[in-house]
Image (cartoon, rainbow, N blue to C red; front, top):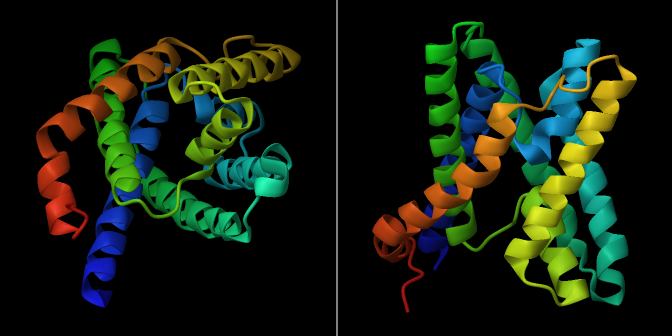
Length: 215
């Protein structure tokens, strides 16, 4: 049992690293950040502050918001999402330092964007498949779905639209409406879900067998 749990956590950490890599490749493409990261990315672009640290603040706020959304159904184990956020954003900071790519040439920017979407989708699938601690972005969507009794995908779309709207508002206040939103934002909103579906279709049974989660 302990061995299997260790394997699950190991795979989970690999998934987190994959998401962090995907997010940073997405932002380095210079075509706009993924929806859930677009607010801290817009602030980072406008102020020069660390994207990793701003993302950590955003994720902590999402964890706090979950406690209000869940009401009496809240669980203190949800606080562990903050620990997940700390690890995740340190991965982001490390990758940001390790990949000194500068956007500006559209063909390579599109390659970076495509790789970002692929790594993000694979990482999201892997972390969810391990059935451990959700990242705050997924956590808030799940909380809203549970509270409103609405379909999970619909709530995901609603959260994404809200994040993009906030990013546009922040960008406008800084003098550039599209500061953190662009083609990459829309592509991520569509593409990540498709990558998750494709990955699970091909690899989910084998992955869960390795992790000891097969029925």
